[in-house]
Image (cartoon, rainbow, N blue to C red; front, top):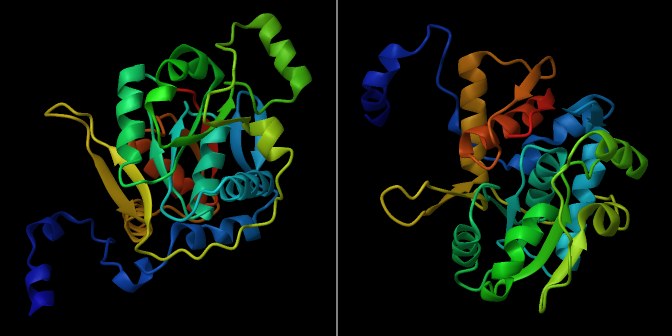
Length: 292
């Protein structure tokens, strides 16, 4: 009876002829499990292209594992939250994979937010006693975070980078010589651990995958509404939800595994941009990142 009712739904009349229902059993997995194929089968393929720099899936895999191990080492456990306050740079994609591998929840924080808006989201994420970490730019750290850090009691860990932090040090100096790069001084914060994500995490923590058991119904993301009709509210998205969304998009658009190159221009802190980013990793595509 239920199948007959569903078959009569009006939206199915508008489906393309080659689009069919997906067996819900295929959603019974996690995003972490779903992207394993990419890292196993195409480790030498370019995962991210950014301003002339290329990061392979093998490199992305190691960076993400180092981040996951660092989070666990600093007391973050399944269900804790990492807020990612970055534009579309490679560290955002690394954070996406690493945070979920640690069993934590990712929450995108727009780099355009004021310090008051940042404070609201960080504190809202920490409701109920959850530990909160923040990955942010050095410029945002100096310009905004230092003003609110003391008012964010659940914020335990801050990881910083710069817009060009992924580049080798000598190349960073060359870039700065010909182009103005936003930057800011990173200083200690009382009661919080502050680390440079490249020098203190990627360079020091193991690249082996952490052993964290994650289920399809665990929360993967908390993405916030715009707040046009009241305070922004965090929408919880499970691993099962994420896989369902990706597989539906792939089916509808006939995207093939491993054959695409994509221009990722939508901001990743927005759910649309994040979904696109998740999909391309799942499909083993190359993403050309456009800083938003």
